[in-house]
Length: 318
Image (cartoon, rainbow, N blue to C red):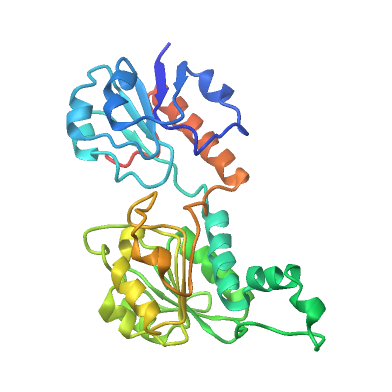
């Protein structure tokens, strides 16, 4: 029976899911969290090693001679040296597509809070402002209607496509930028990244983090946005130069930002976005709806089952 070790299982399953289907495939050990200094001792002897955010460097992979498969409890796999694993003949299997609906939903949770400020207005009511109001209604910030505005999407994979469909349901026009130019489809117009930033009322980031996309959102691109526009990032934190965005928010270059990811997580206390005005930040939870985590765990089980059958799937380092 293979030995299966999970290095950081807590964020996937803080106690509301069942590890039993995974335990049925081998001798399972689950660690909620693994500090860097404990990776090797906990991974020693594992045939199948599963990680979410615990990094597996080339040195770590070389020091684990028994390891035969690496599973990622996520879609992104940049924490793993996939080339080193390939050199050892170790497949790295990820979980694509599990969080599409939840992440797209969170894009609009952030956007609607920026445009309607429901939380702020609810707080004012609970503070007694409505009870004391001389009028039958009031609002503390401008209210922005989405219908007729333009949603700009950077990256048109599964999540980008889901965001486009929701945007169209709100009556928004949709622009998208992809690595490969393509003709308009399903009411979506494709253009360049720079044109998306110039034309869109909302820019939502859904591209992968690569050397080419790191720092994609910087002072120059922000300067090209409408001063009434919003930026949403549920993709990867390093897509944004954070000091540049904080400066842009402080000087009114754009109207606001909604972020679920930052360059370092958890963020340092001096991250400039933590004190930037008109900036909503959620703690990388867009993916975490229970239904999404159930799909993720189910795919992890299927990945391991397929590997044990000699036909690995979702391999990112063929």
